[in-house]
Length: 532
Image (cartoon, rainbow, N blue to C red; front, side, top):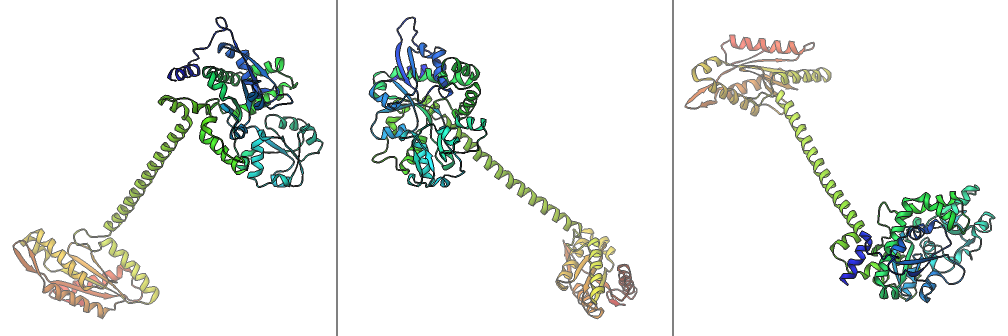
């Protein structure tokens, strides 16, 4: 078995091992096409005309579809060795027909419904031309998925569908997006394309199949035939004009024009997705999804297909490299998902970092604004903030007829304290005075340090008499408080000037009046409160 696998891998990926017709006779092989000659089978023409089949040891006969047995029936009775069929082959497999799917040429089926109406539900009661049998499984599944029962429409057998549609004999018919739309656009006939994928039905298209007997008796030959076929499709996709010319001169039994074949080629290449997945790629999960859709549509009457026996890839023993190749799309999707998750985590962390940094900047800005209005030593409002508060409170007092008083104070003989005990002791005295102010004023009052040893208390809604009582209470508290600094202790006294707002007073006038009162307290012996 290992030798067989190595041979298959060598055939597929290196092109080695083909049997030369010059040294060995060619094996005659019959390949039954799904329909008559057109670009739909371009890869098989290329494999034959470019000698890929001959190099692989085969003399291949390409058989057009004729009236009579279906491609699968011909395969099973032994008239052909390989066949091109639709995803409905899965139904045959479920019914016990020993088919093996070798490759899905089209990642999406070109099968569509050409209709005069936009929605399937609008076809109720109207004539719809549909192909007979289960090979049209995706169209049948689409109707089931849309909730349209075949008893709701008038199904008629296929007979000159395009002419009947143009002659308005039918409301819709099943066709290929690679063919009928071209003719209708040429004669400007309005139509709608209803695709199975619009209803969640996405089938593989044009499956290359063989029989279990063929695979069991000639596994190496099956591998060579599959590899040569895929090589032919690769060539056809890369040489569209050349293959169109080939069909026109040798395979044009339908008398199609160059324009139609080119139209067909463009549409089919989009369905192959060779730029995304390897040609012939099949995924067991995708087949399982197709099986589930057919089961829901009631196509499987008794049992479901055994996908392990249906898919060629399941017959091969896979090594690590084979599994990587086989699940290349899934691995790419997984890598993309992991990359996406990493990007999401990175973006989330980046957003969190930005949020934290923004918060830090806002906090820093807020702190800077506080620092700009706060005296560093005492923690009280500084002179700038003091002036802002007086201006604000004065405006309120004028507008609302409120009382406003200002207490101006100055420490007595403060220079002597610095000279005698040092500036450290002076700083301690300033901080102690600030604490005394904080515990004596109301929350609505604003204490501030406006100079070296000068302090102000702004008292909104407090008249001159009440402010005077507050000043005297502060004065007494300061006088009775011992200041301790290192190994020395001393007391302070403070002089106070109190004034109140009168009509017409400005900020400067108010401060001037309080300063005048403080001056009189100093001249009057200090350690007292003067109110003017």
